[in-house]
Image (cartoon, rainbow, N blue to C red):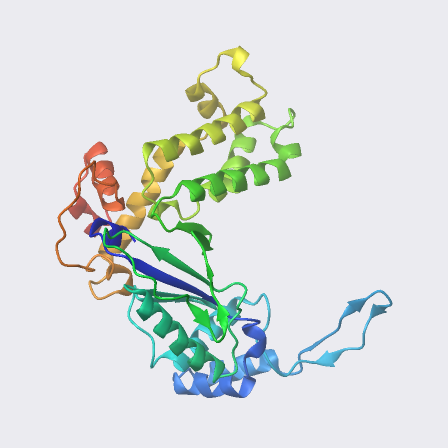
Length: 351
């Protein structure tokens, strides 16, 4: 999205959700796909053994029903199920899939990206026909469309994006893989959502974190594991500005002050609180996670899907007036400069 906004190009995204996706998978289709992907026969037999004789029951007001067999669908909650489903979708839609970033799949969460609204409508219809012909159904209530208008050209009304005869909901923000995507390429709502999620975890563990009998270091480790990890999950990909980092830092420091039993009247410095509980400044952790991800990206081969975003290019467009937007790459350059590091060091893992 940064690339589109920088080059003043409109972007159209369709977030597809499949209705009861795991329950619609035919076992016979699954075995054929595993054979087609040349999976080892031993592994196929092990997977078949996992599904053979599977039974379940339903809890009702009168107790449990009698066991009944399950002959269709993937196991819910199994780590292997997401991998098997990815294989199924890859084979069934391989003939209509575009390269990254124009088409991205994660289990049953599918994102279609186009430069025009007509292209988004055509691609959605193509995917609907392909998936419904294989027994899957698009969830009309959760599938959403997002229009990112970065161009200064006047928009002409082309009509709504539809699935069959139903209009797809148009939204300004959408939660995808834990992060909130906004149609203006900002992350304000995502940062607020992360802070709220951190406070939820904090309240759930309030009895442990505010127990005066527990050592401060133990509470600090617990806070880093349970609370901080929620607030900075996936933050290595965010182009966080100073105001976003400050918001997260203020929320965490309130938690640490409360955890240690201090108030503002005690006039303690934040550095003292962080040292007491053994917690590093969150700004340093965000910088560390960004540079770790930067190193991972640059060690990947140039043809890897994750690097195709770097090579995404548009015709040059003259930048308008005003301060340039702070992009993720600019933040990385700032991090490297702050730590006096050379970007070529990513190849040398020993250093």
